[in-house]
Structure formats: C-alpha cells, structure tokens
Image 1 (cartoon, helix red, strand yellow):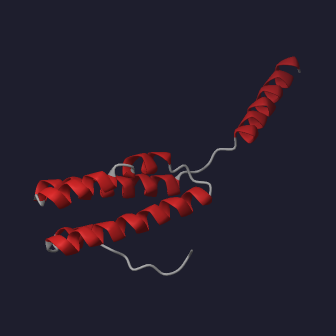
Image 2 (tube, helix red, strand yellow; image 1 turned 30 degrees about the vertical axis):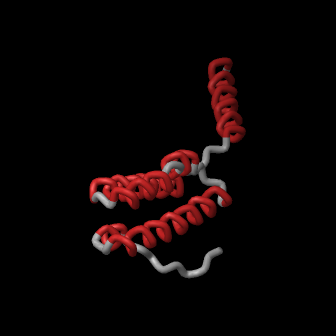
Length: 117
C-alpha cells in the first residue's frame, strides 16, 4: 500500500496526444482513488473528495468521444479539485467530541467553583 508511486503531473498529461491523454488520465484517476482510500482508512474525512471524483469516468468518456480540448479541461479541473479536497482532508485535525465535552464541562465546573469561593 505504501509502495513508491510514479507521480503523474496533470499539466504533462494535458499536453499529450489524444490516446495517451485518455490512458494517463485513467491512470491518474486510479492513483487518486487509491490515495483517497488510504486517507479514509487512516481516519480522514474524504467524503467531499469522493463526491467530486464520482462523475470522473463519465466526463472522461465525453472528452474521449468529442476529443475537444474544453472537455479535457473539464476533466483536468475535476481532478485538480479532488486533489485539493484530498489534501485538505489529510491536513484536517480530527476533533474528539468526547474530549471536547469533558474539557468544556471541567471549565464550567472550575468557573462555578470560583464563583462559590
């Protein structure tokens, strides 16, 4: 799972000729899905990233059929958004609700005990 990956660059992919472009976008998508999965396994909230990548295959298929650069730009933009969301998810600090409630209750008890004294 932690094997060294070949890092694909979206700008490099978008400059490639048509058949290679589709293949490399698919490869990039598979790698991105794997990274989302790893982040989810590690307890990160990847819901938004997963939601954003949901229609990728359909958008890529449209670009593949039309072969128009604007459709490939939509695919690239979609992947950039997913990358951004995944990065944010990985950087998020998970909040332990139970701990937060306990700390809040302790603060309130301390404040109340000071008022009484």
